[in-house]
Amino acid sequence: MKYGQIAASIREVGIIEPPVVVRLPGASDRYRLLDGHLRLDILRERGDADVVCLVATDDEAITYNKRINRIATVQEHKMILRAIEQGVSPERLARALNVNIGSIRNKRRLLDGICDEVVKLLEDRMVPILTFQELRKLRPMRQIEVAETMIAMNRYSRPYAQSLVAATPQSQLVDEQRKVVRGLSDEQIDHMEREASNIDREFRMVEQSYGTDHLDLVLAMGYVCRLIENLRIVHHLAKHHPELLAEFQRIALLRNAA
Image 1 (spheres, one colour):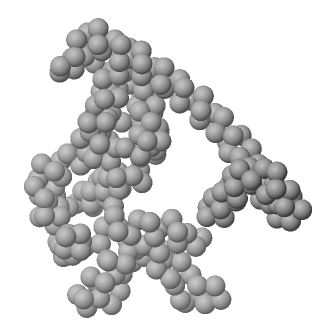
Image 2 (tube, helix red, strand yellow):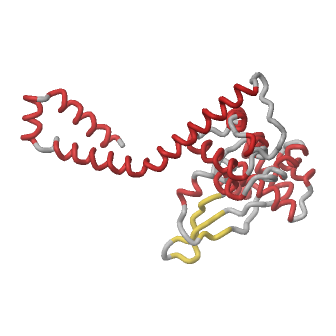
Image 3 (cartoon, rainbow, N blue to C red):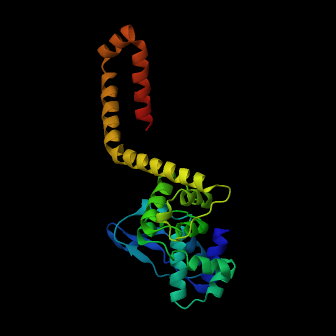
């Protein structure tokens, strides 16, 4: 399906997002393709001999490779805006992408009311369009908090975003009117807001200490692994503390597996 969409887009409006290449070391006239494999295959099938490319200054193959098989929602929005700026009509884009005109209009307005910080946070993530509709209900600082929570939980669905909006204090909503959540009373909404605030505060505390805790864990695991490399220590533990030796060996296996 994605191959067919890209082929239709190229046929209808040409290349919107140029492929990305990097020069091969020691060969100024040779390049390696980083991003745009499907586009290049389609152009070959069409018989096109030339295509304009973007030349990367660094070999960022890992970064680009993760995007080959998908287009993030924000990136798709930017491609649509770029095409429209180049004179392509929304109707023609809809035909090229095999979607209805309403979908193009929604994607064109995707980031209306979304703060720049959230755009940067979500620009490489597969976020449903309806989730952005929920984010628009929030003030900028709360948008950032919700986006960070979605990233931490790796959940971007609209129902999850709705739950975060429902747990948002009234003062952090764009709409000044009292929010209404179907099936919940005002008292239940107030309770949800308090619980969400407590969870968010605990999450921030864990986030702040995560780096230090992780470093301590890595050092401790390394020390345990060095201990059980010593045969005298292993013999002593096996004789007097076999349960402790079993735990040390399990830790060593976990470290090696990681």
